[in-house]
Length: 120
Image (cartoon, rainbow, N blue to C red):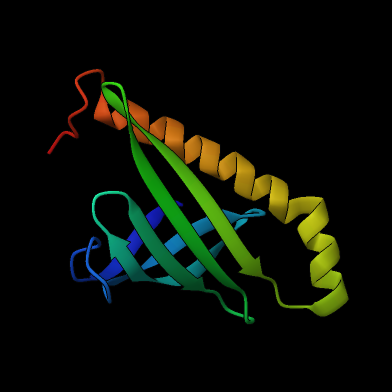
């Protein structure tokens, strides 16, 4: 993700939404996301749509772990394109999702810093 825009509401509230701009294959792809479910303190579910009919639901879980927090991401998605979309999924999309999730987690951890506080 290289940009977030068109944010409506607080992203810890059901109904809030935003547009994510992704860098994908040398181009940019915009997808619209909406918060569908929030269960404090440890669950956030968001859904996204992309041009061409792609859809994704991402279930984010957070659990206390000692002095920190463990997080997990469970994506469930449908790609447009039928058989061709299925081939692209196996060859590219699954690995890209895993790589991007790991990359995002590393960046989030770095932003939080050693003291566990997110800078303002």
